[in-house]
Image (tube, rainbow, N blue to C red):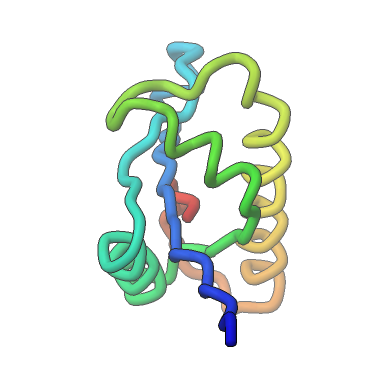
Length: 109
């Protein structure tokens, strides 16, 4: 009997900071991995309160980018959509939370 093999977990984390906007730098791949490395990326992101966006296709493409390198222009639109999603998440949370200083998170997993 053939049992289906579960796909191996994959994850990538992006870093994008306010200074990157000012210098017109693209987001960079801050972490990436498969299996237990992917599990650790996700665990640390959750512990830090970093939003986790699931996109198998985007993760597969980000895994091809060298670590600590900016994403290629071909991924700008897809990553911009994820960054917009994070922005909406964080700003909707700010609208419902008491007025305090909240740092902007810069990693997307």
